[in-house]
Image 1: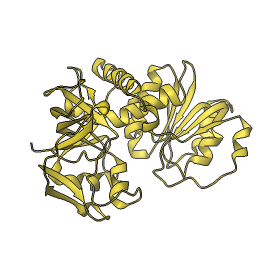
Image 2: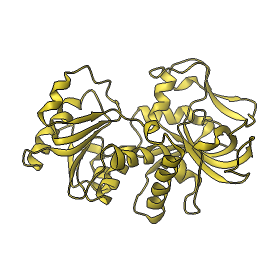
Image 3: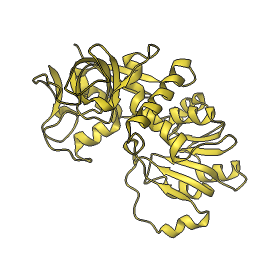
Image 4: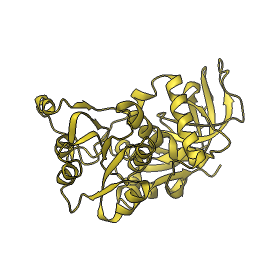
Length: 322
């Protein structure tokens, strides 16, 4: 089969399109013929070595396709089932071995491209809005990078749950945040988002702040938190937040958490519940995905270049030739 392999760390050019043996599923596993692969910024972090993996490795942790074979002890799947998954490395390939308990059946209303675009970012937005801070109707929340992949989905879910949403975005992406449903869109390249948030909340701050940016926004995100608010720091696109005095949380009794998706699909039941509700929202048209482009698997380096250059305004998919 064809796959992308990283044998040395570096730029997009280290993504090698190679022939490798098609793997066979072991006990508790399934072989999935991949039809669409989700590209995420963590794939770039793995390629550059910011997040270290043993070399060589196949990048990618999100895909959708069809079950080709199952290993011993698997009774939840059969050959021909349409499935999707996230949080399992090695997705940049024509076939992948996936633990059966990590695979989610796709309803008829969801095709493979939609599923590959939704699993990681969609379930991330879902756990942030329903578990990290369960948004209640009438609350006010701030979403950093509201035009980003997770951000635009989180805006839509927050609005579904009845929140007033303040969102930050760059000048050229303000329209995406607005289309997603932000009540107030803040241009972080021109405006002091803390000042705008405090003015919009009569100085009370927000019930929750969702921050995927990290270093450059953290201090003001914390200042935007109201009484007993939650600050969900779920990313670090601008860099790691430096050490700080935890007593700063005491001003409003703020709850600070640094979650990841793995914490919130820890059990099979939780994975299925999140995916089910996510697919229901997408299938009904209540949650809209933005797919920026589809790139052939052989051209994975081009997908990474576009992502790193901030040229994309939605999900990037890799499509195998199989």
